[in-house]
Amino acid sequence: MNKCRILFLLTLLALAASGFRSDQPGRYFLSPTLSLPADHVQAFTFDFKDELLDDTLFQTRSKEGFPLSYHRRLKTSVCFDDKCRLLDVAIYWNITGRYLGFELPQKEYLSKTDHEPFTTDEYQRLNALLADEQSPLGNMSYEELVPRPYFTVKGIDGVTSATAKSVLDYIVKGAAYTTYKMWHFIYGPTQERVTELTIKSLSPELIMKILESGDAYDKLWALNHINGHVKPTPQILGQLLRFIDNRNYSLSERAINAISPTDLQSDSVQVLLLSKLNQADYSQKKLLIKKLKEAPFLNADVKTNLADQLPKLSAELVGDVLVLFQKFGVKDLPTYRAVSQLLRSENRFIGSKALKFLQDAGVTDEAISREMAAFRTSQ
Image 1 (spheres, one colour):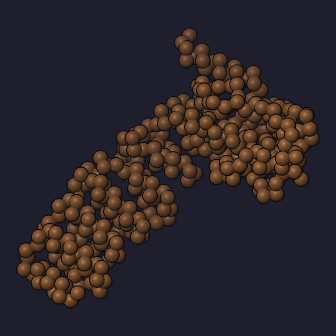
Image 2 (cartoon, rainbow, N blue to C red; image 1 turned 180 degrees about the vertical axis):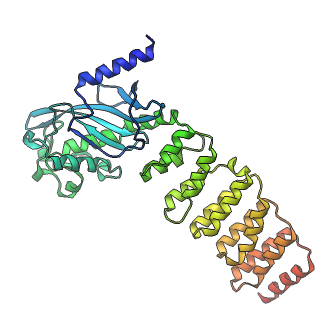
Image 3 (cartoon, helix red, strand yellow; image 1 turned 90 degrees about the horizontal axis):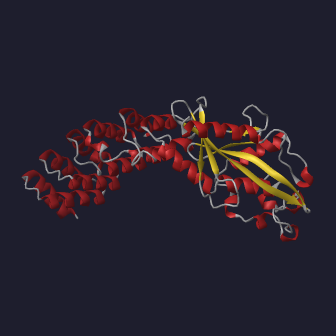
């Protein structure tokens, strides 16, 4: 029996022995990126540099080899008035590193002050609170949650009246320490190991599946991990172009950035970007023109279309296009004539940009030279 098979069996035995089951009621989960059946579990050991003795991170994978989720067991004491009970819970992460959910062993429960068990509503509230990566808990110490007179035992949990009113929106009442501890565990060193393992598993197929997620965080994560990790396929490029629109600036901006200079070696990709530019708002036009500057050359149709659009553009965008033309050494007469039309603009700033471009290009065409002279005289 090979080592991988032995590790797999040991992992399953460990999970079974721990009392964790997928069908028990003590599970509170969000939607995963990939809703594929689990096929096997792999165990990875790390020096997490935290206070837990358990250094194992479990990765669940599909039969296709895609990572589906990660989990690690959190075991620590929660104390109040010198009476302690064990916080024993498995924390799950999605493959993009976002919080996925938690699971309790059989007959285990979370408790509040005086060890009163959580209600169903409180479990659901905790699940929602833990999903907030931007929670103010990230910038708080536990002492800030509970006034110092109540903070007398290491690991103490706060009674409702003792918890600062300003943070009641971010914790389960009577379970300040439990909420705080779980949140910091979720967004601590383990989260970094999760994303590292997913990055090692990245493929064009997995990127496509993440891009198809209904979660915006997942999409952004995938867009941030294309360049330098996978070679974009036509399917990925098609998805990137679909994201470039006016509905979601963040997705659009990340999709544009995910297009590499190598991708821009394709005339068709440049033309498709141009089609997006024609439909884009001001901020996205700037991003698209900036992206075209990364291309190894400027497609002729793209150049002609940009020149034709100059009279419709704002002063700043006109300047961006002219810088683009200068970068690629655009010096043909049709482009010069299109730029010279800007000398008649009511916006003197636009006219000045056009004049400088034509002067730097050393234009000798007589008609354009007369336009330039007339503009200088009118200043």
